[in-house]
Amino acid sequence: MNEQLLKGRWNEMKGRVKEKWGRLTDDELEQMDGNMDQLIGALQQRYGLVQEEARKEVNAWLRTH
Image (cartoon, rainbow, N blue to C red):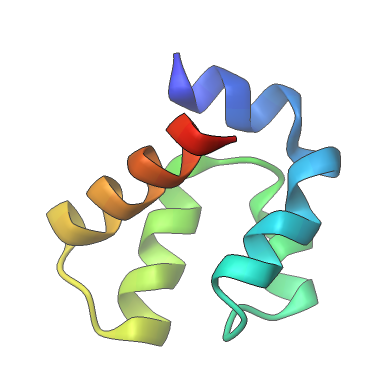
């Protein structure tokens, strides 16, 4: 469900993603196009998180939005 929500509302949520994870570039956000796996991978690279940590952060963030 979270992945479908992210994909379906990506244009609305991009700004909020950028606020939460400011190290992500606009180009990265455009290329992701709401793909949760790409978001998780980018968080791993930019923030040095392991995959499960990044996935938990994204899911927790999605529950609040």
